[in-house]
Length: 169
Image (cartoon, rainbow, N blue to C red; front, side):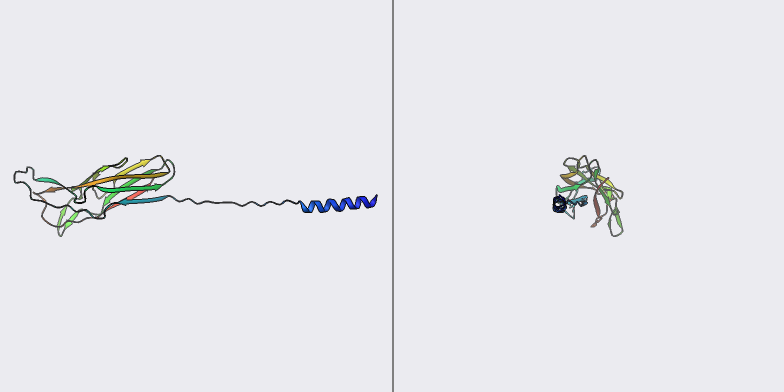
């Protein structure tokens, strides 16, 4: 009887070693970033002046940008519930040498859901706003205009820069 017990004990020990189980956890981290892409179809706007009609009263005329409607696209991946904003700010008034024209002489109309028309300013102006989803893809156009005042604006090649910023809040 002792032999049988010894043999069974040996078999039990061997079986326990063959079917042993061990576990190990692996922690996984996925880092997802917010993404933004803004495309404005031109990096320069030009407005070509023309001779006013002598009978024009008052002596102002809206001059459309030579580029016509400018394509604009805002793309972003943000957190659900965040508001995606497109803002524009001019760096200064229009200047030509010592002559200055207020940047507010340039305005734009907008097409496309969420895009907004406005007037250029040296403070931030909202040009678009969207809410509600993680993925944003918004296409539209801006059509720019310059208000020429023949009574107060001296001839010259006037320049200014405007910066568009796409952000999520």
